[in-house]
Length: 214
Length: 125
Image (cartoon, rainbow over all chains, first blue to last red):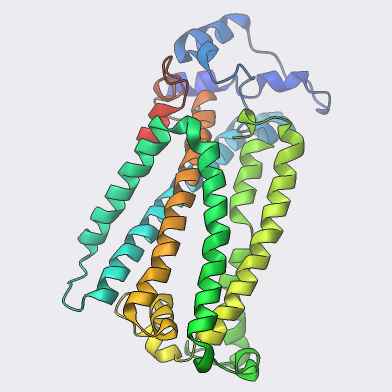
């Protein structure tokens, strides 16, 4: 760990080139840069861009005494949030598959470990795709976009057509408020229920992306 | 990911803002349609599947098979989104490891000569 901390002092060093920064940070000693390059294989990195992208914001604008710790906190937070987000996606997909089986077969015993097996299977497939088909990922993104639009339209059309005689009226949809959570008043129940909706509006992925890419 | 696309400082913020509003509009439309179909709230919450919307789909389409068919669309989309999410996740892990932030960063940050891709992080994640 001492080695890690020692070498991470290079994190903010290259930002001294930036004209926006009002401060002048000391440059990395050349021998240390060389050591880093030889140990991390940095000359092989993707397209030769400069390093220290992930923590540029915190490293560039933080006070010098706090730069290292803030860089670490921001880096760990954003990295862990990405990993947890990927995990939650797998969990949702695996539980949905199990939910479909439960819906179709009454006798199926929905054990949690069976859902976990679905999750592991999905994670393996996705990891293999990401490893061996990484060049096709932009194409996959286009396919996902087309499928998203198609799926959105098809679900809405199917729902509206098949349930045409059996929908709520507009006054019921927009005018009914219920307090099913056991809150003391309807207003409090509304505020508590809005937490989830506001969470949808946060744009969590884009914030992390900004952290990553700015 | 921004390192791999052209004009990143121009394209990425635009894409982020655009996707935010486009997705918000789609979600709002879907929410209203869903509320119109939510005829029996209690039955939906007591669904044995653990997902109330599967029960709503089933009652709206009139059969469990119909509800499962609609849910399968969601599962496929979810798998696609997780694939792209994992790609972004691996880039983030790679970028942080390149800055010597993670343990075993020397191993993670090395890019394979043959693959020219961030293969190891995809496996680690």
